Picture 1: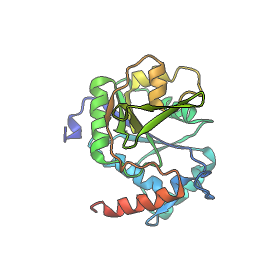
Picture 2: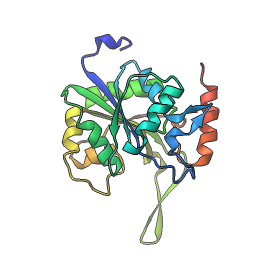
Picture 3: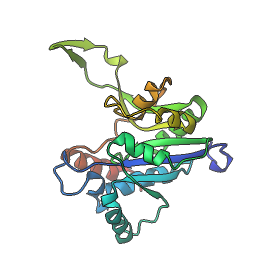
Amino acid sequence: MSDSSNLKFKTKAIIVAGGTGTRMQTAVPKQFLLINNRPVLFYTIEAFYQSTYKPEILLVLHADFHDYWKSLCVEHNFNIPHHLIAGGETRFHSVKNALDTITETDSVVAVHDAVRPLTDKNIIDESYRHAAEHGNAVTAVKSRDSVRQVRDGLSTALVRDDIYLVQTPQTFVATQLHQAYEQPFDNAFTDDASVVEKAGFKINLTKGDYTNLKITFPEDMAIAQMLLNKKPS
């Protein structure tokens, strides 16, 4: 599927940028921090723009940061087309706000963390392809570390080969995602896969990459810059 004009479904990308910078100990949310003098969020949007599937990009930002974002786009001459949507109280509500703007029943929708700027084009393409065929595709990698579970103060070893670390994009046919987000909010919803699973759908995992880093702590910025600088221009 190298030619996007031959695709039989429409694609959307909901990029969720709701961070406030608390764990980064910064004055601005982490999606606006600079790597090589460019905001993290630019790299994330560019990753989807470069996808074979050329999705319509829906950027969900807290309303207080809309003007700031627009000024960054002007300052850096960032002109990739995208729609700006107001974020909600939680990630669940932010995704729902974006989802409410999607009416095409044949759409395949990827949901992605704004602070994952290193997602490879092949991961995005495979996520759309797999979701179109199987209903959903959740990017994940096998745990490299030994894992223990603690319950009632007792720790138990888990089988490492059975443990996967979930990333984004998490991609779904629109009808599945709409049905899932009709559910009331639950604190157990940690990502879109957990919402869709609670609605009764089987979750399919697709291969991620250990470099598909989510920027959460200050040291992550240095790692992301190093990895971006290694990418071919």
